[in-house]
Image 1 (tube, rainbow, N blue to C red):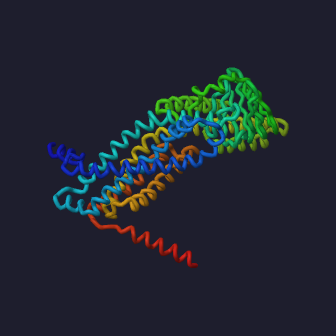
Image 2 (tube, rainbow, N blue to C red):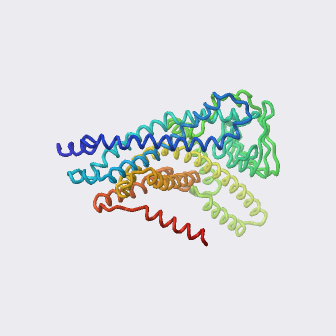
Image 3 (cartoon, rainbow, N blue to C red):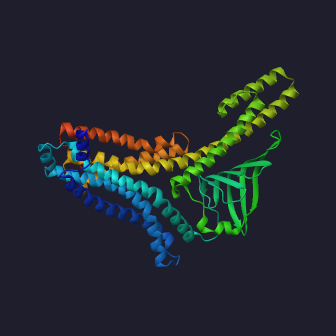
Length: 471
Protein backbone atom coordinates (compact mmCIF):
# COMPACT_ATOMS: atom_id res chain seq x y z
CA UNK A 1 0.00 0.00 0.00
CA UNK A 2 2.82 2.40 0.89
CA UNK A 3 4.46 1.58 -2.40
CA UNK A 4 1.28 2.47 -4.34
CA UNK A 5 0.91 5.76 -2.42
CA UNK A 6 4.56 6.56 -3.05
CA UNK A 7 4.14 5.93 -6.78
CA UNK A 8 0.99 8.08 -6.92
CA UNK A 9 2.77 10.94 -5.13
CA UNK A 10 5.73 10.56 -7.45
CA UNK A 11 3.50 10.55 -10.53
CA UNK A 12 1.57 13.62 -9.36
CA UNK A 13 4.74 15.66 -9.38
CA UNK A 14 6.03 15.54 -5.81
CA UNK A 15 9.64 15.04 -6.89
CA UNK A 16 12.50 17.46 -7.32
CA UNK A 17 12.20 17.95 -11.08
CA UNK A 18 8.41 18.35 -11.15
CA UNK A 19 8.42 22.07 -10.39
CA UNK A 20 10.94 22.55 -13.15
CA UNK A 21 8.65 20.79 -15.64
CA UNK A 22 5.63 22.80 -14.46
CA UNK A 23 7.61 26.00 -15.07
CA UNK A 24 8.59 24.76 -18.51
CA UNK A 25 4.91 24.14 -19.29
CA UNK A 26 3.49 27.35 -17.81
CA UNK A 27 5.32 29.99 -19.85
CA UNK A 28 4.73 28.39 -23.31
CA UNK A 29 1.09 27.83 -22.26
CA UNK A 30 0.50 31.50 -21.39
CA UNK A 31 2.42 32.64 -24.47
CA UNK A 32 0.40 30.33 -26.73
CA UNK A 33 -2.91 31.52 -25.26
CA UNK A 34 -1.91 35.11 -26.01
CA UNK A 35 -0.81 34.39 -29.59
CA UNK A 36 -3.74 32.12 -30.56
CA UNK A 37 -6.29 34.44 -28.92
CA UNK A 38 -4.82 37.45 -30.74
CA UNK A 39 -4.92 35.66 -34.12
CA UNK A 40 -8.51 34.45 -33.67
CA UNK A 41 -9.68 37.82 -32.33
CA UNK A 42 -8.03 39.67 -35.23
CA UNK A 43 -9.70 37.29 -37.70
CA UNK A 44 -13.07 37.81 -36.00
CA UNK A 45 -12.61 41.59 -36.02
CA UNK A 46 -11.78 41.61 -39.75
CA UNK A 47 -14.97 39.65 -40.48
CA UNK A 48 -17.09 41.94 -38.29
CA UNK A 49 -15.61 45.34 -39.12
CA UNK A 50 -17.90 45.96 -42.12
CA UNK A 51 -20.94 45.43 -39.89
CA UNK A 52 -19.64 47.74 -37.16
CA UNK A 53 -18.55 50.63 -39.36
CA UNK A 54 -21.08 53.27 -40.29
CA UNK A 55 -23.31 52.53 -37.28
CA UNK A 56 -22.15 55.50 -35.22
CA UNK A 57 -21.40 53.21 -32.28
CA UNK A 58 -19.52 54.55 -29.25
CA UNK A 59 -16.16 52.97 -28.45
CA UNK A 60 -17.55 51.38 -25.26
CA UNK A 61 -20.11 49.37 -27.27
CA UNK A 62 -17.46 48.13 -29.72
CA UNK A 63 -15.18 47.17 -26.81
CA UNK A 64 -18.06 45.32 -25.12
CA UNK A 65 -18.81 43.51 -28.40
CA UNK A 66 -15.22 42.27 -28.64
CA UNK A 67 -15.02 41.47 -24.92
CA UNK A 68 -18.16 39.29 -25.02
CA UNK A 69 -16.94 37.38 -28.08
CA UNK A 70 -13.59 36.80 -26.38
CA UNK A 71 -15.11 33.94 -24.34
CA UNK A 72 -15.60 31.49 -27.24
CA UNK A 73 -12.18 32.47 -28.63
CA UNK A 74 -10.51 31.59 -25.30
CA UNK A 75 -12.48 28.32 -25.22
CA UNK A 76 -10.81 27.42 -28.53
CA UNK A 77 -7.33 28.76 -27.76
CA UNK A 78 -6.77 27.03 -24.38
CA UNK A 79 -6.80 23.39 -25.66
CA UNK A 80 -4.48 24.37 -28.51
CA UNK A 81 -2.21 26.20 -26.04
CA UNK A 82 -1.96 23.00 -23.95
CA UNK A 83 -0.79 21.08 -27.02
CA UNK A 84 1.76 23.75 -27.97
CA UNK A 85 3.05 23.98 -24.38
CA UNK A 86 3.47 20.18 -24.14
CA UNK A 87 5.38 20.03 -27.41
CA UNK A 88 7.63 22.97 -26.53
CA UNK A 89 8.31 21.97 -22.90
CA UNK A 90 9.12 18.31 -23.46
CA UNK A 91 10.81 19.08 -26.79
CA UNK A 92 13.18 21.53 -25.10
CA UNK A 93 13.89 19.09 -22.26
CA UNK A 94 14.74 16.40 -24.82
CA UNK A 95 16.76 18.80 -27.01
CA UNK A 96 18.95 19.76 -24.02
CA UNK A 97 19.30 16.07 -23.03
CA UNK A 98 17.56 16.71 -19.72
CA UNK A 99 15.09 13.86 -20.40
CA UNK A 100 18.10 11.57 -20.96
CA UNK A 101 19.66 12.74 -17.69
CA UNK A 102 16.42 12.09 -15.77
CA UNK A 103 16.15 8.60 -17.24
CA UNK A 104 19.79 7.90 -16.44
CA UNK A 105 19.11 8.80 -12.79
CA UNK A 106 16.37 6.15 -12.64
CA UNK A 107 13.27 8.30 -13.29
CA UNK A 108 10.83 6.56 -15.64
CA UNK A 109 9.27 8.34 -18.61
CA UNK A 110 5.78 7.98 -17.07
CA UNK A 111 7.02 9.83 -13.97
CA UNK A 112 8.44 12.56 -16.20
CA UNK A 113 5.09 12.66 -18.00
CA UNK A 114 3.19 12.96 -14.67
CA UNK A 115 3.48 16.76 -14.21
CA UNK A 116 2.21 17.26 -17.77
CA UNK A 117 -0.84 15.08 -17.15
CA UNK A 118 -1.57 16.84 -13.83
CA UNK A 119 -1.22 20.17 -15.65
CA UNK A 120 -3.72 18.96 -18.29
CA UNK A 121 -6.17 17.76 -15.62
CA UNK A 122 -6.06 21.15 -13.81
CA UNK A 123 -6.71 23.00 -17.09
CA UNK A 124 -9.50 20.54 -17.99
CA UNK A 125 -11.28 21.06 -14.64
CA UNK A 126 -11.11 24.82 -15.15
CA UNK A 127 -12.42 24.43 -18.70
CA UNK A 128 -15.44 22.39 -17.54
CA UNK A 129 -16.31 25.23 -15.14
CA UNK A 130 -15.67 27.81 -17.88
CA UNK A 131 -17.83 25.99 -20.48
CA UNK A 132 -20.74 25.54 -18.09
CA UNK A 133 -20.74 28.71 -15.96
CA UNK A 134 -19.06 31.48 -17.95
CA UNK A 135 -19.25 30.73 -21.68
CA UNK A 136 -23.10 30.39 -21.94
CA UNK A 137 -23.75 33.86 -20.47
CA UNK A 138 -21.07 35.47 -22.61
CA UNK A 139 -22.46 33.79 -25.76
CA UNK A 140 -25.99 34.89 -24.87
CA UNK A 141 -25.03 38.51 -24.19
CA UNK A 142 -22.86 38.59 -27.32
CA UNK A 143 -25.75 37.40 -29.49
CA UNK A 144 -28.14 39.94 -27.97
CA UNK A 145 -25.67 42.78 -28.46
CA UNK A 146 -24.95 41.60 -32.00
CA UNK A 147 -28.69 41.62 -32.71
CA UNK A 148 -29.06 45.12 -31.27
CA UNK A 149 -26.18 46.38 -33.43
CA UNK A 150 -27.20 44.72 -36.69
CA UNK A 151 -30.98 45.02 -36.34
CA UNK A 152 -32.50 47.80 -38.42
CA UNK A 153 -36.13 46.93 -37.81
CA UNK A 154 -38.09 44.66 -35.44
CA UNK A 155 -37.92 40.99 -36.37
CA UNK A 156 -38.32 37.50 -35.04
CA UNK A 157 -35.53 35.52 -33.50
CA UNK A 158 -35.82 32.59 -35.90
CA UNK A 159 -32.74 30.39 -36.06
CA UNK A 160 -32.44 27.38 -38.41
CA UNK A 161 -32.48 24.02 -36.66
CA UNK A 162 -34.23 25.20 -33.48
CA UNK A 163 -37.82 25.33 -32.30
CA UNK A 164 -38.90 28.93 -31.73
CA UNK A 165 -41.43 29.38 -28.93
CA UNK A 166 -41.54 33.20 -28.84
CA UNK A 167 -44.99 33.34 -30.48
CA UNK A 168 -47.85 32.38 -28.13
CA UNK A 169 -49.64 29.08 -28.91
CA UNK A 170 -47.24 28.18 -31.75
CA UNK A 171 -43.96 26.32 -32.09
CA UNK A 172 -42.00 26.99 -35.29
CA UNK A 173 -39.17 24.94 -36.77
CA UNK A 174 -37.14 26.14 -39.78
CA UNK A 175 -34.48 24.09 -41.54
CA UNK A 176 -32.84 26.96 -43.43
CA UNK A 177 -32.88 30.76 -43.46
CA UNK A 178 -31.55 33.51 -45.71
CA UNK A 179 -32.58 36.96 -44.53
CA UNK A 180 -36.37 36.90 -44.19
CA UNK A 181 -36.70 33.92 -46.55
CA UNK A 182 -37.24 30.60 -44.79
CA UNK A 183 -36.91 27.02 -46.06
CA UNK A 184 -38.65 23.83 -44.91
CA UNK A 185 -40.97 25.24 -42.25
CA UNK A 186 -43.05 23.39 -39.66
CA UNK A 187 -45.62 25.40 -37.69
CA UNK A 188 -47.21 23.47 -34.85
CA UNK A 189 -50.09 24.64 -32.62
CA UNK A 190 -48.90 23.56 -29.18
CA UNK A 191 -51.46 24.85 -26.69
CA UNK A 192 -54.79 24.03 -28.34
CA UNK A 193 -56.74 21.33 -26.47
CA UNK A 194 -59.41 20.80 -29.13
CA UNK A 195 -57.75 20.91 -32.57
CA UNK A 196 -54.13 20.24 -33.41
CA UNK A 197 -52.94 22.11 -36.48
CA UNK A 198 -49.63 21.30 -38.16
CA UNK A 199 -48.47 23.22 -41.23
CA UNK A 200 -45.62 22.13 -43.50
CA UNK A 201 -44.23 24.41 -46.22
CA UNK A 202 -41.28 24.15 -48.61
CA UNK A 203 -40.50 27.88 -48.35
CA UNK A 204 -41.82 31.20 -47.11
CA UNK A 205 -40.93 34.49 -45.52
CA UNK A 206 -41.86 36.39 -42.38
CA UNK A 207 -42.81 40.03 -41.89
CA UNK A 208 -43.56 42.07 -38.77
CA UNK A 209 -46.36 44.61 -39.09
CA UNK A 210 -46.90 46.41 -35.79
CA UNK A 211 -48.14 43.81 -33.33
CA UNK A 212 -48.80 41.20 -36.02
CA UNK A 213 -46.47 38.55 -37.40
CA UNK A 214 -47.23 37.65 -41.02
CA UNK A 215 -46.07 34.32 -42.45
CA UNK A 216 -46.36 33.87 -46.24
CA UNK A 217 -45.91 30.19 -47.08
CA UNK A 218 -45.49 28.38 -50.40
CA UNK A 219 -46.06 24.75 -51.52
CA UNK A 220 -47.23 23.04 -48.38
CA UNK A 221 -49.87 21.12 -46.44
CA UNK A 222 -52.17 21.93 -43.53
CA UNK A 223 -53.07 19.02 -41.22
CA UNK A 224 -55.93 19.49 -38.73
CA UNK A 225 -56.78 16.79 -36.19
CA UNK A 226 -59.68 16.87 -33.73
CA UNK A 227 -58.08 15.76 -30.46
CA UNK A 228 -61.45 14.73 -29.01
CA UNK A 229 -62.36 12.66 -32.06
CA UNK A 230 -59.29 11.27 -33.81
CA UNK A 231 -61.37 10.17 -36.81
CA UNK A 232 -62.06 13.82 -37.66
CA UNK A 233 -59.01 14.69 -39.71
CA UNK A 234 -58.51 17.16 -42.55
CA UNK A 235 -55.62 17.72 -44.91
CA UNK A 236 -55.36 20.74 -47.22
CA UNK A 237 -52.73 21.33 -49.89
CA UNK A 238 -51.78 24.88 -50.84
CA UNK A 239 -49.51 26.72 -53.23
CA UNK A 240 -49.63 29.95 -51.23
CA UNK A 241 -50.95 30.52 -47.73
CA UNK A 242 -50.77 33.49 -45.36
CA UNK A 243 -50.97 33.38 -41.57
CA UNK A 244 -51.44 36.49 -39.43
CA UNK A 245 -50.58 35.97 -35.75
CA UNK A 246 -51.23 38.81 -33.28
CA UNK A 247 -48.33 39.15 -30.83
CA UNK A 248 -47.70 41.51 -27.95
CA UNK A 249 -44.94 43.78 -29.26
CA UNK A 250 -43.14 43.70 -25.90
CA UNK A 251 -42.49 40.01 -26.37
CA UNK A 252 -40.48 40.68 -29.50
CA UNK A 253 -38.51 43.63 -28.14
CA UNK A 254 -37.67 42.42 -24.65
CA UNK A 255 -33.98 41.72 -25.10
CA UNK A 256 -33.14 40.48 -21.61
CA UNK A 257 -35.59 37.58 -21.81
CA UNK A 258 -34.72 36.49 -25.35
CA UNK A 259 -34.64 32.77 -26.02
CA UNK A 260 -31.31 31.08 -25.43
CA UNK A 261 -29.72 28.80 -27.98
CA UNK A 262 -28.02 25.55 -26.99
CA UNK A 263 -24.59 27.23 -26.79
CA UNK A 264 -26.03 29.83 -24.43
CA UNK A 265 -27.27 27.37 -21.83
CA UNK A 266 -25.79 25.62 -18.82
CA UNK A 267 -26.02 21.85 -18.49
CA UNK A 268 -29.01 22.18 -16.14
CA UNK A 269 -30.92 24.36 -18.63
CA UNK A 270 -30.26 21.95 -21.48
CA UNK A 271 -31.33 18.92 -19.45
CA UNK A 272 -34.68 20.63 -18.79
CA UNK A 273 -35.13 21.19 -22.52
CA UNK A 274 -34.14 17.61 -23.30
CA UNK A 275 -36.80 16.44 -20.85
CA UNK A 276 -39.40 18.78 -22.36
CA UNK A 277 -38.75 17.75 -25.97
CA UNK A 278 -38.57 14.07 -24.99
CA UNK A 279 -42.08 14.36 -23.53
CA UNK A 280 -43.31 16.05 -26.72
CA UNK A 281 -41.69 13.37 -28.87
CA UNK A 282 -43.20 10.60 -26.74
CA UNK A 283 -46.64 12.21 -27.10
CA UNK A 284 -46.27 12.06 -30.88
CA UNK A 285 -45.19 8.41 -30.70
CA UNK A 286 -48.19 7.69 -28.46
CA UNK A 287 -50.48 9.25 -31.04
CA UNK A 288 -48.81 7.21 -33.80
CA UNK A 289 -49.26 4.04 -31.73
CA UNK A 290 -52.99 4.62 -31.25
CA UNK A 291 -53.48 5.42 -34.92
CA UNK A 292 -51.62 2.31 -36.13
CA UNK A 293 -53.42 0.00 -33.72
CA UNK A 294 -56.84 1.44 -34.55
CA UNK A 295 -56.59 1.97 -38.31
CA UNK A 296 -54.13 -0.71 -39.41
CA UNK A 297 -54.94 -3.35 -36.79
CA UNK A 298 -51.30 -4.20 -36.20
CA UNK A 299 -48.59 -3.83 -33.58
CA UNK A 300 -46.57 -0.64 -33.40
CA UNK A 301 -43.89 -0.23 -36.05
CA UNK A 302 -41.93 3.00 -35.61
CA UNK A 303 -40.67 2.93 -39.17
CA UNK A 304 -42.49 4.77 -41.94
CA UNK A 305 -41.06 2.46 -44.62
CA UNK A 306 -42.52 -0.63 -42.89
CA UNK A 307 -45.86 1.14 -42.40
CA UNK A 308 -45.94 1.97 -46.12
CA UNK A 309 -45.47 -1.74 -46.91
CA UNK A 310 -48.36 -2.65 -44.59
CA UNK A 311 -50.62 0.00 -46.18
CA UNK A 312 -49.68 -1.09 -49.73
CA UNK A 313 -50.52 -4.69 -48.81
CA UNK A 314 -53.91 -3.62 -47.42
CA UNK A 315 -54.60 -1.64 -50.59
CA UNK A 316 -53.96 -4.73 -52.72
CA UNK A 317 -56.18 -6.84 -50.46
CA UNK A 318 -59.00 -4.30 -50.75
CA UNK A 319 -58.75 -4.33 -54.55
CA UNK A 320 -58.84 -8.13 -54.53
CA UNK A 321 -61.50 -8.81 -51.89
CA UNK A 322 -63.87 -5.84 -52.19
CA UNK A 323 -65.95 -4.21 -54.89
CA UNK A 324 -64.39 -1.38 -56.84
CA UNK A 325 -66.37 1.42 -55.10
CA UNK A 326 -65.77 0.10 -51.57
CA UNK A 327 -62.09 -0.60 -52.29
CA UNK A 328 -61.67 2.93 -53.65
CA UNK A 329 -63.20 4.44 -50.48
CA UNK A 330 -61.08 2.31 -48.13
CA UNK A 331 -57.91 2.98 -50.10
CA UNK A 332 -58.57 6.71 -49.98
CA UNK A 333 -58.85 6.34 -46.22
CA UNK A 334 -55.55 4.42 -46.14
CA UNK A 335 -53.88 7.18 -48.19
CA UNK A 336 -55.12 9.74 -45.68
CA UNK A 337 -53.80 7.64 -42.77
CA UNK A 338 -50.39 7.29 -44.44
CA UNK A 339 -50.17 11.05 -44.99
CA UNK A 340 -51.06 11.67 -41.34
CA UNK A 341 -48.50 9.16 -40.11
CA UNK A 342 -45.84 10.58 -42.39
CA UNK A 343 -46.47 14.06 -40.95
CA UNK A 344 -46.36 12.77 -37.36
CA UNK A 345 -43.10 10.93 -38.00
CA UNK A 346 -41.58 14.12 -39.45
CA UNK A 347 -42.62 16.03 -36.36
CA UNK A 348 -41.22 13.33 -34.04
CA UNK A 349 -37.93 13.39 -35.95
CA UNK A 350 -37.80 17.19 -35.59
CA UNK A 351 -38.13 16.79 -31.81
CA UNK A 352 -35.42 14.08 -31.83
CA UNK A 353 -33.09 16.41 -33.73
CA UNK A 354 -33.71 19.06 -31.11
CA UNK A 355 -32.95 16.56 -28.32
CA UNK A 356 -29.71 15.56 -30.07
CA UNK A 357 -28.62 19.19 -30.41
CA UNK A 358 -28.85 19.73 -26.67
CA UNK A 359 -27.23 16.39 -25.81
CA UNK A 360 -24.36 17.17 -28.19
CA UNK A 361 -23.73 20.45 -26.35
CA UNK A 362 -23.90 18.71 -22.96
CA UNK A 363 -21.25 16.17 -24.02
CA UNK A 364 -19.20 18.95 -25.65
CA UNK A 365 -18.89 20.76 -22.31
CA UNK A 366 -16.92 17.74 -21.06
CA UNK A 367 -15.26 16.39 -24.21
CA UNK A 368 -13.46 19.62 -25.22
CA UNK A 369 -11.98 20.15 -21.72
CA UNK A 370 -10.95 16.47 -21.66
CA UNK A 371 -9.06 17.15 -24.91
CA UNK A 372 -6.57 19.16 -22.80
CA UNK A 373 -5.47 15.88 -21.17
CA UNK A 374 -5.44 14.09 -24.54
CA UNK A 375 -3.24 16.83 -26.04
CA UNK A 376 -0.70 16.33 -23.23
CA UNK A 377 -0.62 12.60 -24.06
CA UNK A 378 0.09 13.57 -27.69
CA UNK A 379 2.38 16.55 -27.17
CA UNK A 380 4.74 15.20 -24.53
CA UNK A 381 5.95 12.07 -26.40
CA UNK A 382 6.02 13.96 -29.72
CA UNK A 383 8.19 16.64 -28.15
CA UNK A 384 10.57 13.99 -26.80
CA UNK A 385 10.69 12.18 -30.14
CA UNK A 386 11.32 15.32 -32.24
CA UNK A 387 13.79 16.85 -29.74
CA UNK A 388 12.71 20.31 -30.87
CA UNK A 389 11.60 22.89 -28.30
CA UNK A 390 11.10 25.77 -30.73
CA UNK A 391 7.77 27.43 -31.52
CA UNK A 392 7.92 26.55 -35.26
CA UNK A 393 7.82 22.78 -34.86
CA UNK A 394 5.35 22.99 -31.95
CA UNK A 395 2.99 25.30 -33.86
CA UNK A 396 3.09 23.16 -37.04
CA UNK A 397 2.32 19.88 -35.26
CA UNK A 398 -0.30 21.58 -33.07
CA UNK A 399 -2.18 22.93 -36.08
CA UNK A 400 -2.19 19.48 -37.71
CA UNK A 401 -3.56 17.68 -34.65
CA UNK A 402 -5.90 20.50 -33.69
CA UNK A 403 -7.45 20.64 -37.16
CA UNK A 404 -7.80 16.85 -37.16
CA UNK A 405 -9.55 17.02 -33.80
CA UNK A 406 -11.99 19.73 -34.87
CA UNK A 407 -12.76 18.07 -38.22
CA UNK A 408 -13.85 14.95 -36.32
CA UNK A 409 -15.71 17.06 -33.75
CA UNK A 410 -17.65 19.14 -36.31
CA UNK A 411 -18.35 16.08 -38.47
CA UNK A 412 -19.64 14.18 -35.43
CA UNK A 413 -21.85 17.11 -34.45
CA UNK A 414 -23.40 17.20 -37.93
CA UNK A 415 -24.06 13.44 -37.90
CA UNK A 416 -25.64 13.65 -34.43
CA UNK A 417 -27.84 16.59 -35.50
CA UNK A 418 -29.06 14.47 -38.43
CA UNK A 419 -29.87 11.61 -35.99
CA UNK A 420 -27.33 9.30 -37.67
CA UNK A 421 -25.11 8.62 -34.65
CA UNK A 422 -25.58 9.17 -30.93
CA UNK A 423 -24.38 12.45 -29.33
CA UNK A 424 -21.98 10.52 -27.07
CA UNK A 425 -20.02 8.98 -29.95
CA UNK A 426 -20.20 12.24 -31.91
CA UNK A 427 -18.38 14.18 -29.19
CA UNK A 428 -16.10 11.54 -27.68
CA UNK A 429 -14.79 9.74 -30.79
CA UNK A 430 -12.05 12.39 -31.47
CA UNK A 431 -10.81 12.06 -27.87
CA UNK A 432 -10.83 8.26 -28.04
CA UNK A 433 -8.94 8.15 -31.36
CA UNK A 434 -6.32 10.71 -30.33
CA UNK A 435 -5.93 9.01 -26.93
CA UNK A 436 -5.05 5.76 -28.73
CA UNK A 437 -2.50 7.64 -30.86
CA UNK A 438 -1.11 9.24 -27.68
CA UNK A 439 -0.87 5.86 -25.92
CA UNK A 440 1.10 4.45 -28.86
CA UNK A 441 3.44 7.47 -28.92
CA UNK A 442 4.05 7.15 -25.16
CA UNK A 443 4.88 3.45 -25.61
CA UNK A 444 7.17 4.29 -28.53
CA UNK A 445 8.94 7.09 -26.63
CA UNK A 446 9.28 4.91 -23.51
CA UNK A 447 10.69 1.73 -25.04
CA UNK A 448 12.01 2.56 -28.51
CA UNK A 449 13.72 5.81 -27.46
CA UNK A 450 14.23 6.83 -31.08
CA UNK A 451 14.21 10.34 -32.49
CA UNK A 452 11.75 11.17 -35.25
CA UNK A 453 13.14 13.85 -37.56
CA UNK A 454 10.13 15.73 -38.93
CA UNK A 455 12.43 18.23 -40.66
CA UNK A 456 13.04 15.61 -43.39
CA UNK A 457 9.31 15.54 -44.03
CA UNK A 458 9.23 19.34 -44.39
CA UNK A 459 12.24 19.23 -46.77
CA UNK A 460 10.42 16.68 -48.94
CA UNK A 461 7.39 18.97 -49.16
CA UNK A 462 9.61 21.94 -50.08
CA UNK A 463 11.34 19.88 -52.80
CA UNK A 464 7.98 18.76 -54.20
CA UNK A 465 6.65 22.33 -54.25
CA UNK A 466 9.74 23.55 -56.10
CA UNK A 467 9.31 20.80 -58.72
CA UNK A 468 5.66 21.77 -59.19
CA UNK A 469 6.59 25.45 -59.65
CA UNK A 470 9.30 24.57 -62.23
CA UNK A 471 6.85 22.48 -64.25
